Length: 154
Image 1 (cartoon, one colour):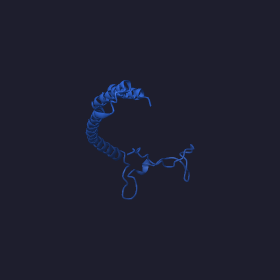
Image 2: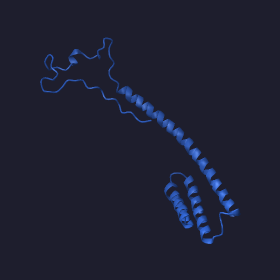
Image 3: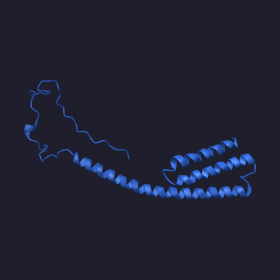
Image 4: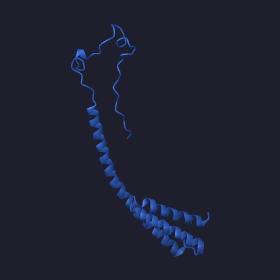
């Protein structure tokens, strides 16, 4: 592939990291700068034909690349460690909120004789003996199960 395409690609990636992602984390300024240097390096090598990937210049680029990689890995580890603690705290908070919601929406407890504690007067009035309808209006009196709260994916 044309070396100028690589130079343009590295420059574009560097600009995107600097402009778009630099606000999210400061490490992207370093990485964006590295990719700009890499783009200039590829462009200079393609333009001059000086062999910047060979000999001492090649080792200098490899050293720079290794240093940036180590710094990026350390920054990634620190960010992951920080976010893991925040994620665990958020997870515990959500579990407590779910538990509180389930407790507040629990059905009335049944009494010893299997009744729900309601009076006989609470039973629906209407309909005739052996009838399935409410006061003859055509609606069924079949009980509806209570809705369960939606489950969240883990």
